[in-house]
Image 1: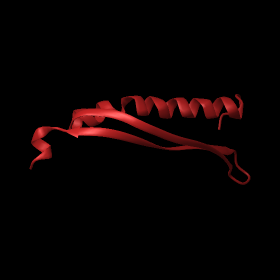
Image 2: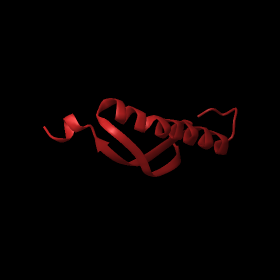
Image 3: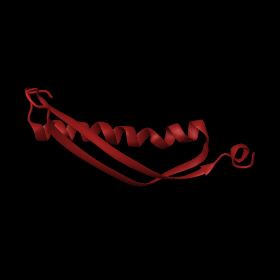
Image 4: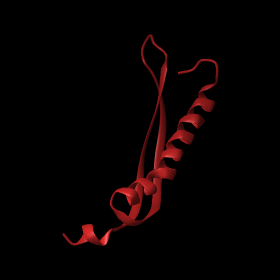
Amino acid sequence: MDKSIGLEQQQTAVLQSFYQMVKGSCGLVTEAFAESCEISGVNSSVNANNRGDRDLMITVSGQIQMTVKMKSDLANP
């Protein structure tokens, strides 16, 4: 954890990073195997944990729900 900025600012930065990943996720799916992709939901949580005698650790976890239409050549093998 960067002690030069506050915990709330760091949590915001972590969430922004996660949402940037969400923003590009449908592009990755359509590039790999889908004809279309729509994000239908996003859940996230941020935790700050004290690591004993060490600094705090900030973690983010999340889920992305997508509605995906498979490419026709993959949908019917």
